[in-house]
Image (cartoon, rainbow, N blue to C red; front, side, top):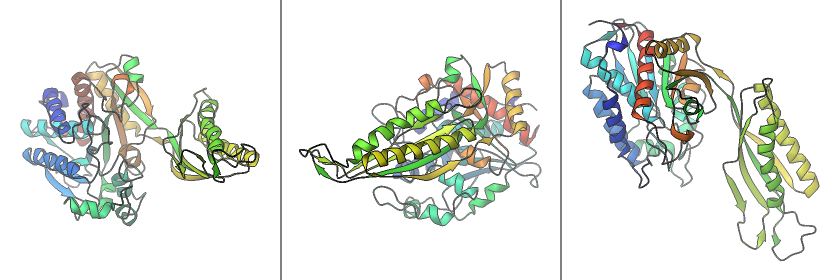
Length: 419
């Protein structure tokens, strides 16, 4: 039996996306459904009702990861998992993460309606705190499940408002008893996501097959000088802001000037800047900022970090300030599974879809899963590459194409059979 024979409904998928988007919907048409809030709990409850209505059995682990199971003919086989996340940014869109979860739900609904079976069991996962908007870092649920973080450190994380991860998880009623490490035993993991870039749209493609994830290194930079009155002479000041400014500008320069052997540059972002004492007429004594470097070439990524530290040392000496460049987080270049990439490619070809192969420069739960489990991602285009934005937009046709390729690859892996 082929996935193309299942009653997969793009219309029902789209209706589910729009229904979920009402939970935490914003005036500008986006979503604010941050992790472990009351709205997150409401979205989880809706997802639970939908999953149980098509015969799935829900388990929740100690980190709040929701795992639906659909039994296979051979329970001894490792399950095939589909997943993504329902949490959003404060000004997020309707599709980031949610598309992957609800496309997986549509596959389960179609199997249920057809009375079809798979040889291997199927799992459908909603990961806790992929976004990292309220509790940092991102991808906590999948990272801890794969052993990259300990449960204790995740449960102890604090939000900017002082809320504690574990306490909030219990407060909203979504801390279960299952061991998240059990998810290391799945046989394969597949995730559908919007591209969060515009390569697919610009190329006029229906779907993207993701072959690997770029390497990433994050840093925290602190520049320390000395407070000075805004009316004091400029000479002799140890102004942390005037030292931080050229170092912040250097992030873009370093990214564009650090090339892979094929000539591809890196990517650099400063996303957070904090100034102390933050007074209009005081030259600040301390500036903190974050740096996010990414590259397709791990060696080039390493050179980017070295260049940032070297530039910081130069500025510190010239301006008589202290510059500390501290590594915060690193994710290595992560290849996805060749066999799963091939199955996704086969699905796109069989359905006559226009597709391309590309890496992801963005962290996803799939990137952590790939450390332990054969993994692949499928991308749909998104208009203008816009994401983490209330104006995030895709078409129903793109959503349907991505869901179809996801189904083809997942069910070929799980062994779809007739009732």
